[in-house]
Length: 89
Image (tube, rainbow, N blue to C red; front, side):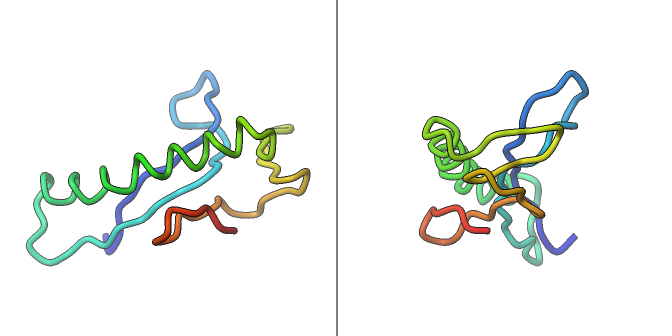
């Protein structure tokens, strides 16, 4: 794989089956081992989770019939964490 990353999704009874709210990706570099990749993923996981929770607390992100809504509008793909730590569509 050329990329690896983390996702924030709504929790449902089936493991990892909830609608994905947001994602962050990191490149898989030549010579990466599991530890090196885990360090890079961890660096984006925390800002990703904080940004997603902020939208949830503000009531901007909701779930309806298995779809993620941002400000009442359906998202057709998960939000992405940019280099500034902001979620974008």
